[in-house]
Length: 493
Image (cartoon, rainbow, N blue to C red):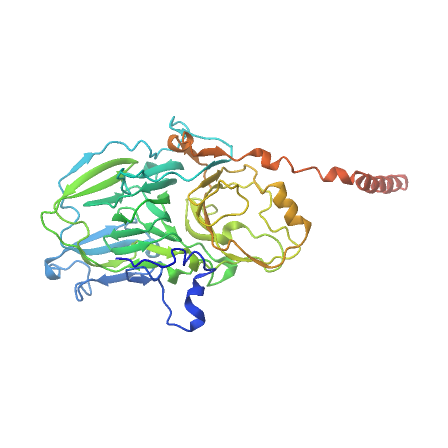
């Protein structure tokens, strides 16, 4: 069980994870003090883990007889002929294989979830209006809702049966999953804890995910979520792609999210007999269940590179301009999921966390801009400049591609009036952006929610025409240009 922190905001108040290392005066540590589990580090590695030493066969994957009478099971997540660098799989050695179940039955549709985001679907809406939502409410006291039952879809693009697209969900729950596991057969989940910690059990082992951390569980992998009270968070789901760190380009070998800071579970098994379990499957946006008489988390050992992981966002290494100008937000990218277009990702997950702001002779806030990306923002904790007071932890803000946006006039004036000193910004805050090259449509759940409101266009009413106040100066310049042009024409032969 996790220990309680005397200061619940201990890891929110730091500027960076390195603050916890006390300038090398103490032994270094990789996880928060209240994290009860052990992990293996490194993204993209081939891992192996044994709860009982000597379980994994050497020199082969599938022996005629596995040790301890275990069953051998492979989970393959790429085409068999995929290039070696893109081939993803895992071998599991378990007490009972996943195939041992009692068949599938349909579950009622979750009316608050959506998977088809084509505009032809009458249950989704498309609009250029800049939209926002105040925090969605967690279940009321006396109403028991677990992670699966608390899933709600906000926006997305495409359809999972097309094998390219994405969806953004929230989860609102207050009850742990009991004798119930969930498997997403559509795509990968990137889960953002926002209120309350998630104690997650997977086939590969346990992970503890707190606000300020993210968790990725890949398509087809079973998991169970335990919570400690009212819990809320966000999910970015991708179809036909997997999350990976972005390329670093001219940054070289280091920076942004370093691969060694991603943590993977170690094998921990749970073996039971005649123990009824329900496995909930999401496939094509529909829900199904199978029942079985044994625990789905009975994996004694495993090896592979298709393994769930978590990442502490306070370890992100921010980079930026140390001379002039505002760098594109791609420098804030933690994870990306590729699309079939090599020039545009399917989805990026970016964060805006504590960092130094030092550029000289520069308008430092985000400049007024339009771009091709659909941008859905959320706030994990703290506050985020440039948004209204209604942008609280747990909120959502949405802007579709090519719709102009930027700060209000008061912030523009303050930023242009005089040069600010080098300063730390976003202290005690982490905001994030789920960004895609694809246009989003909004679900009925979000569109009809009482939490929805529009960004007030009047915030830009005070963007006055400063140019006209220079009328005499401009006319003088243009008159001079006209005279030079006339003289040049008169002197032509």
